[in-house]
Structures are given as C-alpha cells and as structure tokens.
Image (spheres, one colour):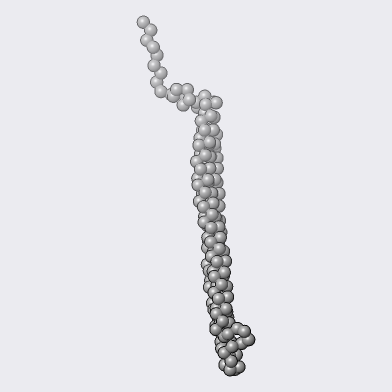
Length: 172
C-alpha cells in the first residue's frame, strides 16, 4: 500500500487550495458589493443634488418675477420698451422650465450611469464568487486525482483489483 502520510498531505494540500480559491472568490464578491454600495450612494447624492438645482431654479424664477413686478410698480408703466411685462415674465418662465428639464435630464443620465455601474459591479462580484466555488471544486478534484495517480504509481491494492479474496480456476 502507498505511503498514507504522503497521500494525506496531497489531500490536505487539495483542501487548502480549495479553501483558498473559495475565500478569494468570496472576498472579491464582498469588495464588489462594497463598491456597488458606493455607486448606490452616488446615485442617491446625484438625485438630491438634482432636486437642489431644481429648487434653486424655481427660487431664481420667483426672485426674477418679484424684481420685474417691483420695477413695474416703481416705474408705473406696464410696458418696458418694445416688450411687455407679461412677455418678459413668460420668457423667464419658459427659460426656467427649460433649465429645469435640462437639469432633470442630466441628473437622470447621471443616476442611471451610477445604477448601471452598481449593477455591473454586483454581477462581477457574484461571478467572482461562483468562480471561487468552481476553483475550489477544481482544486479538490485535481488533488484527489493526484492522490489516485500516486496510488496507481506505487501499486496499491486499490488499483490492482482490490485486496479481496482471490478465486482460482479449478483445473480438472
């Protein structure tokens, strides 16, 4: 029979390699999950920033309207040059609306980008974990194959038909 100590070392080595492969995949998955959480936070921050910009545009519009009304009240005239007060207010409102829409579009693009990067990173983490599991299985199978080759090389009974009783043909 083969040296049991050598076979045990080969099997232990396969087990250690398998554990290492699994742990590597697991750590890569945890790192990817942490990175995807950062992307999620960046998406949330972009949403909050976009809302702040929308609010600022609305405040600026209201300030502009108030200034126009005050100027009209102080001047006593409803018309200012060739543009009327209402036309000026309509133009300001239109510009503010366009600024808000542009801001929303930019924010939606940014948020979508962060969400996609987060999803891609999570997928890469799951893939790394699966790869680690497959590497662990491969290490175990490879290690057991080495043990089997070692046993075959040294000629253990396992590979020579077993150590059971031998039957001889009866000769008459």
